[in-house]
Amino acid sequence: MTVSTIREGEISALDSFTALTGANGDATNNSISIPPDVSSIKVIRISTAQTGATAGAGTFNCKLTGDGISVQQMFTAGGWVNVGTETSTGNNNQVTVIECDIPVNTNGQISVFGGFAGSADAGDASMSVELMFQ
Image (cartoon, one colour):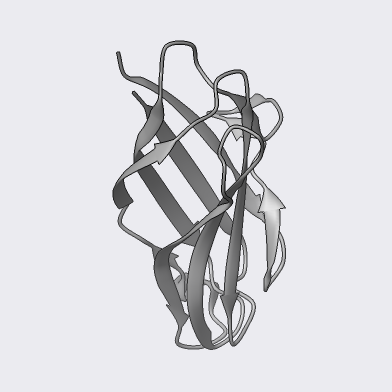
């Protein structure tokens, strides 16, 4: 049985992580309870977008923590570049798909965080992370 869940939200600051607390527009928290009858995360899909605030470049990053996994996981989910200060230079990146086999702990929870790093502020940035359990 495959079960998927999504967390999404705005990323608020350069070189730090922000809890992703949305779920397709529904307010929630960033903790995901491990679904029953699953043993691992098989696929992670990460989508990002940003408007561009100042000239610069960098990467989007995702972090998974909590007692639902034995080791914190971090992933790079594409890059961004701003040519100038115009907000029209933002990026809508293709979805990053990570096939994996991350064991999960039954009755645990996973918290999802998004961030961006680089040489300048990415502007208004958002991230959506889908975890597919099996």
